[in-house]
Image (tube, rainbow, N blue to C red; front, side, top):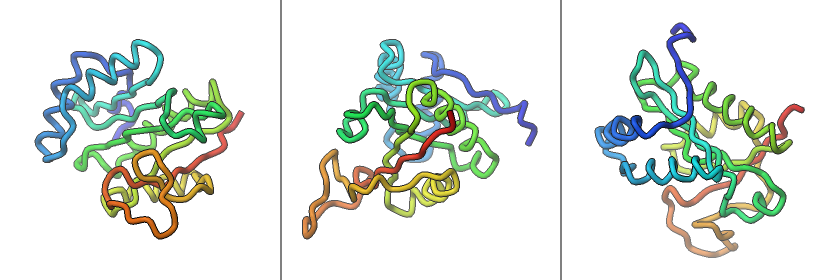
Length: 172
């Protein structure tokens, strides 16, 4: 695929119906209201959203969240890469890497470190491999479920809210 065919730019209101429809077709619950909230957060500088299009068709997105709920990141000013998705039919074409490059370049302007919460189910396998290849390592605080540490012996639900937080030092 020619790199010129991939366009990455900030989320715009006109993108929202196409994005919501793409995920609806996959059976994923990602309604338009989610992206409307992201757009509002983007307008206030709380979050940025980078969307990827291939040949004019929505392919994926990533957000950088500056007001993360994860206290260890928030306390030291580490922005969190959050809600990173590439549609299945566009995977393995370098789109995810380009989205991550964009997010990390943005973060590098305000922090020497990027953070993210990696989902732990097989659905996140491709992203887990990408994070490892990019040099992300666990932050050493163990598993978290819905913004609290999972304590030894505690029973937690295995779903999208069970994560291991990772960080990566960015180049100056």
